[in-house]
Image (cartoon, rainbow over the protein chains, first blue to last red):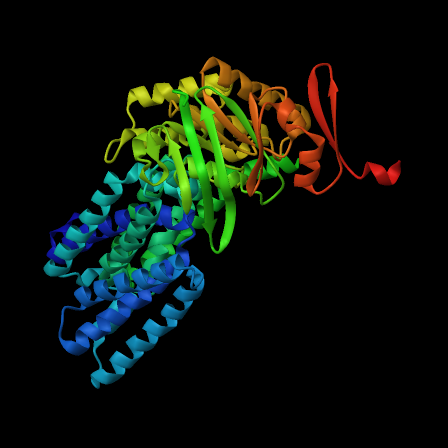
Length: 274
Length: 264
């Protein structure tokens, strides 16, 4: 067991999975309580389009991915604020638009590029030193901002209008939150992939939601489930030679179903019928 | 001009989305007054409360809260205004406890980057005791009855240590006996804590024994004065567009609405 830790790629994979598991599961609590699930899914496709453009033009794929996913939340957020479109509608448009761009950019490449597909499904065991640096820096930025504005995010998640009435810059903070979601997706892109990243954001928080009535405790439960599943995914994929992204998602989904079965909320529901 | 005026509207008109919510309203509310705001649906009652919070500001005329113009209302002023919005249904499973909900009332006074201290936790416990909900500190908010949830929302406003309390339909969706105990309770808070209270309601009879003054609003301010001054058959009939009878019993003034002439 310990022998695998002597491999540098395993050390990087485990460190990356801890950071990604933590960042995704903390952001995930805001995502599910504020009903932002779809915007996250749309943003991950935009990020993938950015990656493909990066490979096509020779720029750093992750840098272009960040630009694409931030642009998506800015435009979607702007359209929503101006009352032009419902959030879900504009995200729906961007979801297909950015996927179309990704297909176009891949087509323009002429040659098959396996690395591009790595970003679609993720492979945490191939995280490079450079990737790890990006994950650590962006992850730290997201966590620091969440820590600094925690009580404000907490308030707008519960009741945006009330928060505004108390003098909290609710509109600005909601926008900041969208940006953090976009960055979180880019952080996780290489290791879990554009298609699966959303499971890592939504599922730990959804499992934690089953287990507690306290929002503060929900953050801790979500973090434990997120980090635990993420590390478990790496270990299982190493031991059984499985694709890491899929293994992680299946593991965390298993945790979710267990938490539904053992949820105290379900028990109360059954009792109140009696 | 009176020195202890805490809210002053001068010819205030507020329009948004091409609709005028209140037009040319002038009124002064004194520190420590309990004012009921009444009027039909869509008459601008909620807009008036929101303007006192600085969330909407007049398109012409002026609104002054404390020593501050509406659009300059700063955080430290907002912290002195407790707001209890019209009650939305809280999802049964939403993960927020009673204590967490009340703690949010402290957030704006804390300022950026600061986390709640032991003293804030004490203030939360005290506010819950004040509204008689101390035993429910760790209960999920969604599990409480409508009246209990409303008390928690009042505790959240009180924990701000406000000078002004704004309440939008605080008794909607609560059964009648609880409504009366709620109004009595609010009146008690007003007296004990020397709060200025603005309460929006449909239920004129319920609040008239408790309020100092009433504002009758239907875009324009139709009347502003003591309940016996405002509850006038002619004005009420004009504002509500149907026959209204005002009667006094045991010193209280009551309003009966309905199409009595058809039955007579």
